[in-house]
View: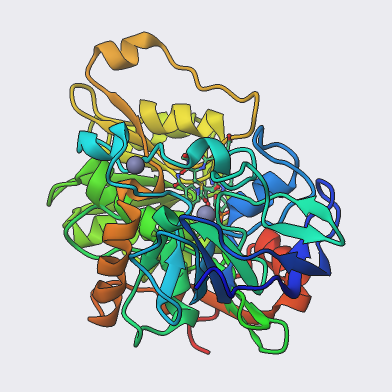
Length: 423
Ligand SMILES: NC(=O)C1=CN([C@@H]2O[C@H](COP(=O)(O)OP(=O)(O)OC[C@H]3O[C@@H](n4cnc5c(N)ncnc54)[C@H](O)[C@@H]3O)[C@@H](O)[C@H]2O)C=CC1
Ligand SMILES: N[C@@H](CCC(=O)N[C@@H](CSC=O)C(=O)NCC(=O)O)C(=O)O
Ligand SMILES: [Zn+2]
Ligand SMILES: [Zn+2]
């Protein structure tokens, strides 16, 4: 297969510099080498993590690069030694790999995988430490091992999940990041975004945080879509029990997915905290039972929550990426057992702090990547759960857009687009 593969020239949105508009370019995509898979990206969603790296605040951000990590597509060709997927397979590229052989994978204690992480962190492929993307000979860096803002991308074989071919790619692309992140394991999961489709197709805008692209590259703006990562925070990382009181800080895609996961886990109260009260109505349908806007209170938000909950919540989730809120999320937890999970990504140079007494007295601080889900083995399972209508995904799509409109899609995401559920 790899022997016949040729360089493909296609459209991609290139981030030439931090914070400068993405530019749609003709990009050359080299054939997959050993252990690599070239994927025709049909839909991609936007995630705040793309915007974070694009902002220049990500210590791993390299430019020029092709962003995007929440997508679905079809395998176009495979390199030598690739056995688990073949051309024509429907796949979701996964920024978190799963090789099954490394120390992390074998530990049974984490969904992190060490096989390709060093290469993906510096924007190259493991095999030759080079990029498969170029423009007239100039290399363009990969991003998160996925680079889905391109009509074709090359990923490591350990970073691609084969999914049910009947699953709608314009929806399940959201299972590549945000929705799974918030959910706990056992019940359903979710996230939020906008979806971009390939250039000639229309863009699907999801709720507020992501987008998807298609053969012309369709962009989905997920903002209301609970991501697999979001679901996982509740199911895998925190293991919320029935009857628990849960606080969710930030009601974007990820926070909504956390709320959905908490509801599915049987939480008795789900307190949503956001500085944008517009988020509250929508959050109700994802399971949030009470709302607090910190701007309406003089007292620190952790004290407000402790007062409302007879001593604090059983679980809290920070779904913003703000280190001050991370502290509040820990400190609103109940003495003796309260667990706080950091989901949001904070910029380079930011640090968390609290009085160690908070931990001495039994509160637990944790974090989660991709909701603790193992990518290649569990993303297909999440797709199946969606097909059985056990988890929401459609509800997170706010807009459908084409790759050509990717900058507008990011504008919508930054504006915190709110879906009118009556439409
Ligand atoms: N750990 C992981 O695996 C993943 C982490 N993320 C990260 O999760 C975070 C959330 O992502 P999205 O839901 O897409 O973002 P989003 O921007 O859609 O949602 C954030 C929400 O927080 C609210 N907010 C902002 N500042 C606040 C404050 N001080 N207090 C209360 N609310 C506040 C905003 O109004 C917004 O509704 C981002 O940092 C993203 O990078 C996303 C996916 C996976
Ligand atoms: N390069 C960033 C890393 C930011 C980060 O924590 N990413 C999350 C996923 S966010 C998805 O939208 C993650 O899973 N991290 C684990 C990993 O292996 O990267 C930085 O350095 O800030
Ligand atoms: Zn591994
Ligand atoms: Zn993401």
